Image (tube, rainbow, N blue to C red):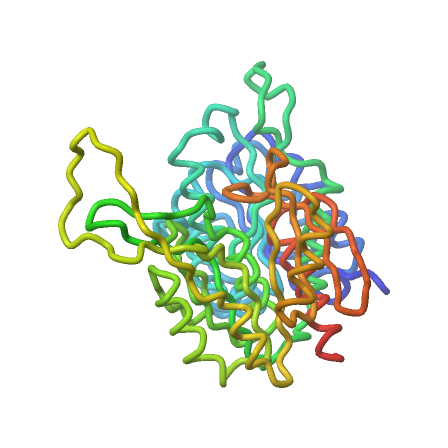
Length: 401
């Protein structure tokens, strides 16, 4: 069987939502693809669909409680996580997402999720107001940064009769997401990658600073994707509110000078450098020691240029692969090619930050990857983690792997 699901152990978590019945279709497709599927149902899930359905589909006992007598595994919440190649939660309610985000393990499903080192994929389904709730979105953001994956719910008519974003993604979308995760290869195993991310903050005085709009999401996505592909990742990050990604060595900095110092100190360890940070081009020449008072008069601040970090790496590149970014608002290709030539990049990732919904602060991006060999590859709009893997595909090619 050539299916990506073949011979994979998949734990399917089913929680208590009206979309629970759709999990049976997902389960059936995974089994038909050759996967060994083990189902864990929450108590609430059993109110919507019976365990016998999943037992018939999988040929395995369905676990419905933390104190169920294990029939196939020694201790289910210990052995299942170890055997799993992937854990999929369909549907994922606000309750299970909130539990995991806050370290609560009070039933078999939450305990198994907390215990596994396998990739965990949530397919949320809930009322649109619940999905849009800031607490929910903060939980999703926190878990995403920690390496958990989410399959965005769809817009449409909900069980409550209202319209909005909260419907479970279609089975095809869910199955593709599972296949994509299972297909991730350990193709960067042991490669040391240094990633810069986020903005820098250049102090004007103890209160004010020069900063840019970078959220750090793209750089953090690159770091996360690289870890998933087996790389050893050093992440040098300016100030962000993104949780520390699992598996990376995080070096926190504030100013451009601090980032330069951190990068150059760790450069000997790196085989690849990916400069995703949005470093300030200028810094105040003489920052005030005290808060500058508003007097009504005009204020002039003398600025001096900061050192271009990726250009400095380029001058000390050796046999490393160096990747730069070009966030532009006009003449995208021309400006990116200019950076490529002047900074000794192997390739540059260019994106038009003037487009709505991509670039700074957004969860998605759309880029053009331009190589020093003259190649130009457009990557369509996609979640930043997907864009990160496209960038790493180019890194792998540049390494000759």
